[in-house]
Length: 396
Image (cartoon, rainbow, N blue to C red; front, side):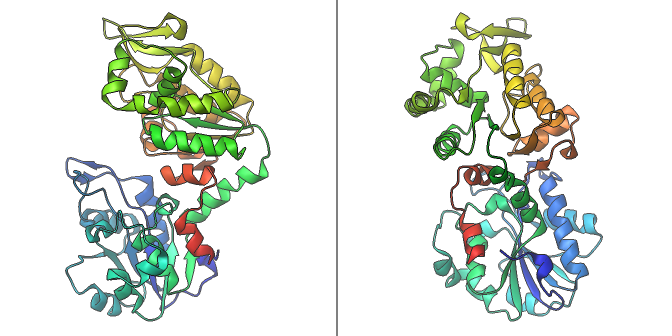
């Protein structure tokens, strides 16, 4: 795959696929690391006298965060101190792109407004349809993929342009790939820390990762950890109703199957943090379950157990919180595990949708880790050795 730094950019129309997808709070776009880092790429391209056309998505149809990108364009303008023209899909965007001068920047509207999500076509099929065909008609163009976080999707804006023009890896994506190359360089003592509530995806990743021996230990927390405990026959009590109502019990058989194959590699909680009748945190040992108290975190003994594994690891990848860290008194597990990863000798890669928010809450900085990945599910898919459509098309 070719680096954008190897390309002659002056006068070229550069279609830059970013991931500006961010949290929307009271109608305002939260300034995320994704926006900050991609803004640096946009600035670089403009300084090289390229005509930069930015492509990104935001949210999903039917959700509150499914909004246009006009507010994103204003944030980028402030960050790079350059004009950023926002162009909607119902405008003559091809004409506006052809009229661009060297160094100018256009941000096209939310690509998911064109219903690209869910259309998992081949790159060649995408290249022949819709807005991709219009964009590829613009002469003297190149494509730059700058977001690992979208590469697991075979969507039009991710794979369609690469079929028809020279394509390059952007600096944000390159940093992810450079960090992940450590997976192959480090042969043993590799630990994956997985938490959160995306149980289906996590179970798939765990199984593939262990089958291919990409990790030696898997530490689990959050709802994912509770599903594994349920698979061992543990009855929680009050938390059982929550797991049933939210549909997590359907994953018990899969978790049980994984435990039967890899019980020596999966590290489970030995105690949990629960809320007592005075709304204070209390620790409950697994052997003392079931309990009528609600569980929101891993416990103190589990934290120490997990820290020992991390300190013995040469490489640690963190993706997903250990508990409900936003809830008062239950940030302990996530905080202590992240601190251990940050300040031990292990080579550290952290990612996932809640990770940046957790860092801010705990006073940790991205530079406390070897690499902060802006990818979530795509990072896990990469770890499991899956082929990512957005990377495969670049290799061609």
